[in-house]
Image (cartoon, rainbow, N blue to C red):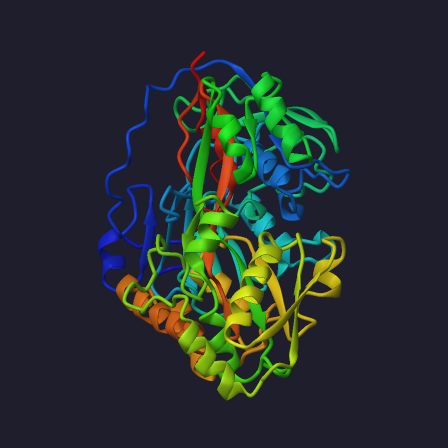
Length: 516
């Protein structure tokens, strides 16, 4: 088949992957009905945790939640994620491959940028290749290293070649950093994208205002006339601004504030179960934590229901010492759940030969909930003869000074869109963020095999074995997955959870409407 042609759906069912405007190979399934029909109109103000003088209109440089919201307002990607985190077509009409290495992409017809320029394959080639240029300083440069060649085969067709098979390419391309910009764009002062809102005001560190793109390519969308994005760093102040009517959406509400919000008849708490976790790290290249009995004993000291209830007010999901949450499509459900067991903890720690030696653990407010988790481990450890000393260190500088620097400490990991990404970044033997420093050749081989596997059932089997290896052998204990909590004015409709982040995975601008 010649370059640039598009495989038919039937051809792709014979051994490859096809993502088309008609849907995924995996049935989409029922979509929950919204509470009312969308209506147009209305202006809202949304508050993130902060704005910065480094705020950017360049998708490649996005670093804060406010950047992600802004970029999803102004731009589109080739794909987007549905509410089950599966990729569906966006600017691309289809993305198909027979071997997961060479991908054929066809763009939709008739899409224009805000300035009226027609979207072509040249814009896509430019937008993706610029991530490989060190001068771009792309936050996803490491992922873009997989792009070996990208070339246009016609005004709306192109091919993308990867260095190795990766069935997750359609999901990767849905990240806001890979949003499509006009070919040759370097200044990034106007926010000229194909997205649902046109840029009206952009003041770094102050606010962003977007107004409805009347020529948006998705019929009927967006619904709101205008969105103003601001930053309120203090969480209590964010909640106060919401309850007083100064804002209509507040990102990242603390569980302790949920009662205040729920008590207001005009506001609602929105919980998004997520893969965010704070983990106890036991370095495998230092003593005493490198002893496998020590790591096993510490996992049995985790009182997971207590952590869920007391630390997170039940806004959490019990975890099983690996990073794949129960609501993930690749979650392995048949693994026995690790639970608090003082007898097993005592047995393992005695064989580790620790005795009453003082064992320091480093915790910080920078790793959410870690200080209280450390106290729980200290308390239960004392019951089995383990002398844990909690060293609470400031949040400022924690990640550069303490994270991964001590035998026993804590980390905090944000949700990632794919199992491959979280395993590659934090568990692969040579990963820079391999927190416990564990090395497992079998795990590394499975990681590469799963990345190249196009069959969903087989990938689930491979990722299931990897979860078992991490749970049994890795020097990491993950007690719970922490839910994301936002608060909204009740008159905002159309919300649904997206597990990658608050504000519907930062994509709310396209989906919400005002029912005032």
